[in-house]
View (cartoon, rainbow, N blue to C red):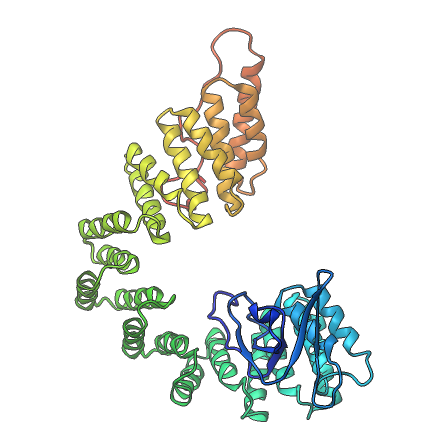
Length: 480
């Protein structure tokens, strides 16, 4: 899956593969439909062809010998594809390069070289992959691998954020090779690229053509969703909202269904159509309850100013779907609201629930908020534990990490643990947030002075939660 987008369709050019599936022990060749941009395990589809083969596992290394029609051996080419399918990229690259030194070179013209380019693409060595594709097209524009090379060039440009060039290559594929198997997916991704380039009208035209021409394509749901987005972006708001509603209704379990409903809601809010928002809320609350529908019902109720209804929907979400990622997000949002109202016990309870979210970013932020809530209640041990969980989280944002360090220092300072406080303030003082860094340096000077005092009253300790805010706080009601 690329950049949050849907999985690409499998290629029609078959990848000969006899070792990546349970067919390993069979006397047959498993040729697998693979798009090189979509190599995740389980995304492939095996097809046993009517050619006999011997698949053996020898000394821990797979050897695949297949007799072609002339009786020749194309083992090395297959070995590279086996490695590629197993995500063993360096061995795959070596195999494809070795295949090109054989005489004659196995496979179709340029096939081994093309798969070298695909492997480089998988390794994110995009300039090298582009050089391979360019050379295929320069040496022989009529090469059987030429259409795939053009498709590869388009994707290289997408990965390098060269959307204009990517669109050019996708259009080149559509015009020069209109019957090639990659044309449907190229049409869809061209449309999505045009939408990213703010060419919404062109995206609408392409997507309508795709939907009409390829009604059975596996990208059809994604095309329907993107068409709704494109229509809204082109100013056809009502048509776009209708398309997104139809998409969400027809594909309620699709990963983009919830996003489609939210896009509809946002569109209605921007237009001030409260009557339609009310209908949207009614629709969400009368259908079979899912985590997504309850979450969206809460969002719509909030937009309508019906906070009690929002709280009721979200409370039901947390009760009926406690392990769903959306429950974690709702718990975090409610924890922030409680914190701003100084309802600290509720904030701690909700933040603790959010800290069990399967989403790393939600967990990290929840731990910070939990620490801040406990700190304001003078529960220093619990606060320090929560802040430590936050700083230990691999996915936590840097700004939140520095807040956790500052909070840990403050918890130690309030307990007159000067040396421990100084250690964390030193780290917090490295924050790129100037306000937080300045505050940490001030506290560092204070604890240093207090540490030298053998007797007498120490210098003033700051009020719990008194770390400075950075302009607009990263999250409402919390320290930066």
